[in-house]
Amino acid sequence: MPRDNITFKCSVCGEENYIGTRNKRKHAEKMEIKKYCPRCNQKTLHKEKK
Picture (cartoon, one colour):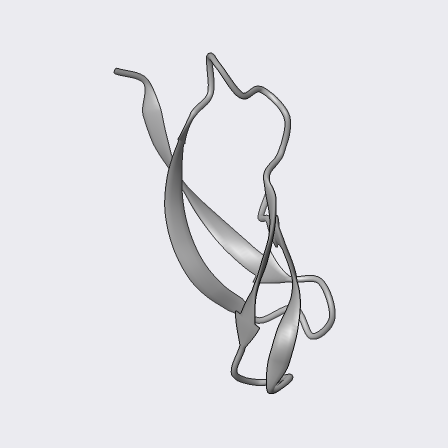
């Protein structure tokens, strides 16, 4: 399976907090998830790092 590791970066402070995987064949677009950022001390939007 073509699952690739991706890093999620906080869109507010730029901290790289989470690591996940996704199938690039089925989901070609970049992922965005709302997760907790310990630096911002709140839930923020985390985008996939380039």
